[in-house]
Length: 376
Image 1 (tube, helix red, strand yellow):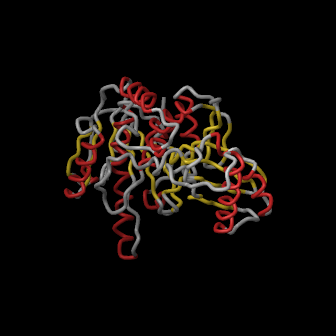
Image 2 (cartoon, rainbow, N blue to C red):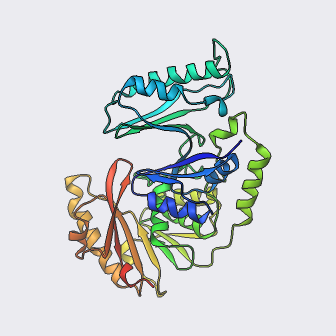
Image 3 (cartoon, helix red, strand yellow):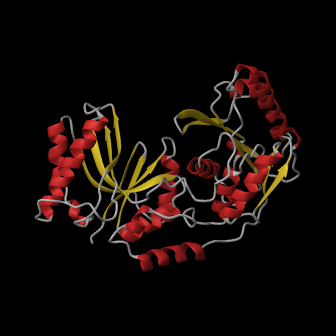
């Protein structure tokens, strides 16, 4: 099969990190948009991107992109797609994901019904049959419509790629793995400096940091949707996995996780063990205010709590203020704080050197960066 357009989906705000990842893997960027980065490739590249991308949520085969201002346009353009290039005659192909933003076609249920009908008609034409049995493997269709431009895709990943398979234990407000990896990559950390999360919770930031430092592919411990497809080549995928495993390297510098809650630290250790990085990350029960280090040039990355209830506000504001004392006691460190509290810098008492907007789920947050102006 000739090469085709492969589109990686990511959370809003992580596009630049995803581009850097894709470039580091040796690909050329074929296109990008809000929440999407594309490359040209084949099924081996589908395997490789699914296995290795840390900030992507899904890897999609993009079948078509077109303008659709009416349901007739939507039907005609979907019907023109040659689904048989990827789907066998007995494929199941439900329209499992629809998004519509700033578009005239805003009814997701109607779009879903029309895309499905058009896809069925296309398959019937390609296979010269009056009926598509849909008794085989699942090929989920995803449709994204933004500003009246529709993308029709096949989801190769199955479950979201943030589900690495190691985090069965988590705290009350877990940070998704793709966002945690994005924070680590944003900091420029690749294992050359000490890394610490002074309020580590279930350890996601540090586990992702250890996987980045050791070059461990994030998808090693999970399965993917494409493994059920008729075109799946198990031997080729095993070779891609072996290539990834061969590049894993030891972590040279200290990775530390501190938290005041002993129970959540137990979960963090379990998660690190499942991720295969238990020997790379050291967790200890400690109040954030007691953290200190004689080492120079380290990095703190943390996602502190924010005041969900009025009664917690004073306690949280004091926590932010005390974070400044801890950070300023360290020699030439950088700090990256992901926080949804818009009053963070006021309570912290100092404006960040830089900040960046990210979405933690549907919650708008900011990464507040300190010490980055002096970075060498």
